Structures are given as structure tokens and as C-alpha cells.
Length: 300
Image (cartoon, rainbow, N blue to C red; front, side):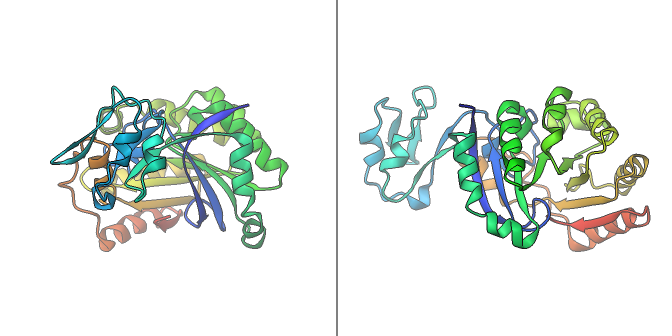
């Protein structure tokens, strides 16, 4: 049975495509964006985290750990990631849910059964299922089988992708995707290498490829002050969309709500000094694109 590591299944989502949707987040991403709002989806493996504010100090987790990967300290429960085998036992026995395992191996059938519980909402709102991540196409076999199964059930399907995947992965899912939410983070290759740790060329190549294949595409751009919010950069994105005949773009304001996640995952959060874009700034960028004949949405 084909499986994937699933980070989360979010019900009643209204920001990941048309209508009311169920969004399935897969773990693992080939990019390492410095502002990533979901750092828990970057690793392709399950992870264990501890919430100080939930812990009641009962030590049930330590007693249950067969690998002796947990120890108490003044800072709280410390997790030895070299010893930890990500079995999830500590999370299962924790009475206050202070221990959590991020990522669960699930089969296509299991995920389909979960999303099918919301089928009535898809029918009433013209919604459906969105496959997101991380980068969902990095788990190509699962993505193909799952999306094909969704189409067999009559569900509208969306893939939220960063585009940094082999072209064969794009081609494999194309017959089963009604809409791509395609991320464009920066058009300058040097900046892309600096902030995403990967080149922009494959992303643009795949975008042009799916357009040639007549795919339906909405562009999504995270707006991060001082990194990609310059008016001339937004103008370039608009020009690219005009060239490709694309009309829908979503500008996603950067926010700092993920900072606590980085702390729990012991990951560096290097842009905490950046301010969130103001409503006035977002409106200015919106007007630039509107003048280019593009339908602009803020957020979502």
C-alpha cells in the first residue's frame, strides 16, 4: 500500500482553493525558505516536540520511552534526537498533550477515508480536496494515487506546489489536478539561492510547462518586507503572468506566528527582526498588479 508522512489534515479550509476544502499537508520540502510558516513540514521524517505550557511534570513520557531519549532539566523535557526513534509512545501516554509527534504514516485509503467525511461540504460549496505540504509532489507516488482516487470520487482537486520538483512529477499528477496553487517567491536567482537554498530556473521551467499543458494555475506570492516586496519585483511578477496568460494572484503577507514553532523544533528563526507588511503596503502592491490587468487577492 502506498503511504506518505502526513503532517496534518485540515478540515473546513477556505484559503487553499475555491469553496470549502479539506487540505492534506504532507511532510517534506526541497526548499528551506527562511520565512516558512510551516517549518514542521520541512523534514521528510516524523518529529517529536514538547510544549512547556502544557506540561504538568508527571514524567509519564520519560517512563514510557524505551530508548531513554528524554530527560528532565531546568529548561524542561529535553529530547535526544540521536536516541529518539520517533515511535510516538511519549505522545500517546502524555495526559496533557505536552508531547506531540509531527507526521504520521498514512495510506492513500486512510487519507481518502478522512477527507471523504467532508464530501457534503464540497458539494454544497463547490469545494474539494487540496494536497499541500511541504512539497506534496516530492512524494510523487502517493500524490498520484491519492489525487486519482479523489477524482474517481468526483472531488475537485488542488495541488499547492513550490514547483521545485522533477518535470516527471508534474506530468504524473496533471491528469488528476483541477487547479495548481503555484508559489513564486523571488524571480532573482541569487536571492532565490540565498533565501530558499535552491535555484529559480526549475520552478519557472515547470510553470511554463504546465501552462503549455493547459493547466489551471493561480499564482501565490508570500510578501516578505526587504526580501521580495520591492515594487519593481512585483512588477516583474506581473509581467511574467501577462506573458503566460495568467490572471489570478494571491499576495500572502508575511507574519511571525510561526516563530514559536521554530523554537520547539530547535530551528533558527533568522528573520525575527523583519516587520510584517502593513495593509497600506499590501494595497500598493495590489494596485501595481491591478494596472497590469491581473485579479489580485490579499491573503488566502
